[in-house]
Each structure stands twice: as structure tokens, then as C-alpha cells.
Image 1: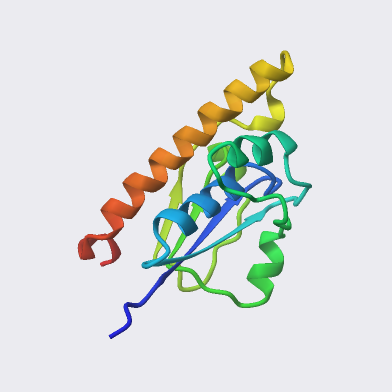
Image 2 (image 1 turned 90 degrees about the vertical axis):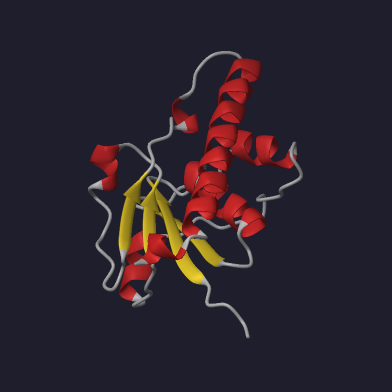
Length: 150
């Protein structure tokens, strides 16, 4: 018997960094249990530094498109959880999806705001990447327990 996959949507401002990383990690680490998508409140273009640091660990997101959260909403898509990965104030701007059982906020630093040398920016972007991966690992572990979805 095939297990039911939980549909998860990751949202941040531009769908260019944090939500893209979260979607990629959930697809890698939770493919058996989850269908992951990501979108932005104001879709931009993929952050080149994020593409680079993900490639460093063998995940290619270079062909990903940025998506608009409101177009997903208008399409009537439903999710078991909508996880915002931007700051709390920005997360408040996300639409409420009908039927969503969980609305979760994980706050991560925004790689598009990093300043310094290219190496300093990449190092901070790697830190965010590693924080996102750790959070996804914790999420897949917690969500594997049935109680999480009740």
C-alpha cells in the first residue's frame, strides 16, 4: 500500500533563497512522505549565491523557477502545512490556504541582505543552508510521528 504524501508549501519573500533551499532539502530528505513546493510573496529571481552553496553539497536548483504564492492560492492548491521561512512580519503577508492544517514560521536570515566580500557572503549563505537542512531534518523526524498531523 502506498503511503499518503503530505503536501508542504514553503514561502518567503522572493522565493529566491530560503524557500528554495527548504523545498530542495525536503524533496531530498523526505521524498517518501512529502510533496514539497515553494513560492514567494513577491517572486524574484534565484539567488546565485544560494544556487552555488547548494551545488557545493550536490543539490542543483539552478533550473528552478520562482513562483508566486498568490497564483498557487488562486489555483485552489491545498497543503497540509504552509511553512514560512522569512521573518514573522513578512510571514503575516502570506495568504491563508483553505484546508491547511498547520501554519508554521521558521525564521532564517535573508541571504539577499548579506554584505561583505564574496567569500563572507558565501560563508553566511552556507550557514543559512545548514540551518535550513537541520530544520528540515527535525521536521521530517517529528512529522513521521502520526501525532504531528492530528
